[in-house]
Image 1 (cartoon, one colour):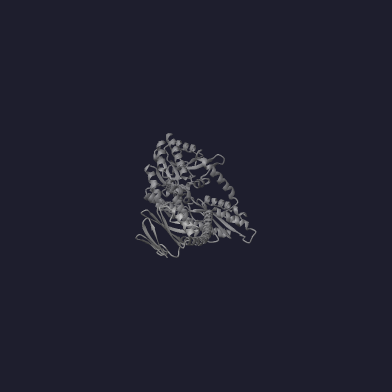
Image 2: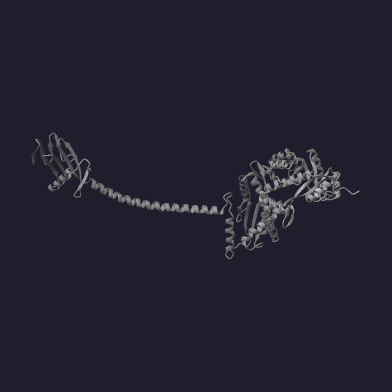
Length: 587
């Protein structure tokens, strides 16, 4: 069926499939009008309107027309009516508005597809989230276990050497005690306390980095001789412990000797050959104590005995307890000893054996303890070394000697005073300046102060300390090598240190009348001193026969009990003022 409708003198031809407006053709079956979908055309002006619907009932058409008349340019391209979705398009031509409306299922299908995909996505996301949660939980738990293991290792191991630490040892001994009535019984064991000799001086003089390197190297060397079930433990500072379960006393003695030997070898650090040595104390379970936790105290007591006796190692003895208690007390009192001037000098004269004249004195330190009385050096020198006050002690002795020499000079006695200094004192970078300042303040000529360097105590490369001695020599202070012949570097000392005096150790003098070997050593030393243009002083002369023999061997200056024992300053000053000759035969 076809029909013709006229709008505003314009002709529009229409049939059930298409219509024309002027030169414009609208086909419902075109791409814009899918015949399978409901479609509506609506043309309107201010005077007339026309509607063509396809697959849409009249009532729905009227409703759609009412809807589209409300649409504007700002309206959405999709609207919904009666649960259906419609796309619309408007064309403005002169005074006419042409609307094209098509029902669509694309959005609904899209929404359904999106909904389905959202559900699938939600399920996938859920399972991914669950998997990630489980995976992350496993990773976090594993990481937590690793962190806990790391923290446990840090808590029970020394960060510098990697060895077990004090906490580990405490737990080990506590577990040993708790297992006494179980199948893990240890019938016997040894515990070793190892303390490095003179480590504090090395640490203070060369810095903590060098000290740490020394600890690491010695820990490696000791580890090479420690085999399981024995364990090497560092409990702090320069102290190590070896825990040796099932070890007998005899096996412990053998291991202690190995530990001393391995620690006594030189360690090259920063161009120096450093050798601190070590003192080892041994305690045995259960013969020394049945309480595992007191083994450390027992071994520590034995270690202090070894250090004092310079024996390398020692086994715990109940009698050591009293000695150790006294050492602890003295160490506490040492802090005030220098402040209160309790450390004093006694003096032993050096005598020209040819005429009995006093040509010099040696200042020897004593401790005038307020409760224990006068203490000899062996009672406190090791305590000073362990306390880290070696350099302070060296300056203290220098100051006292200069003050005494200045006082004597003011009273008319120009006798030089010699004092003993350790090579560790020479590591004090300000020592030379300190000596120079004290000489100036006390108005004392430098030749009235002498320094005696103990040969067999050095653990340092000679080349390091020779520069310090060179500075001291430039002040005009004479240098002597004490205990000459007892160490292994006598010729090196003479050649490098350029000493002014050689002091022959008393060990060669005690039996010199009968020991031909010692006579030869003394005679050779005199010849050697002449070659190096050094003076010779003989220590430990106790009899007239020894003095006469030494004179015949070319020795002229001596000190020892035959002439005088060390004495307080007042007595020494009286001898000097009176000009008394010592050791001369009564005629």
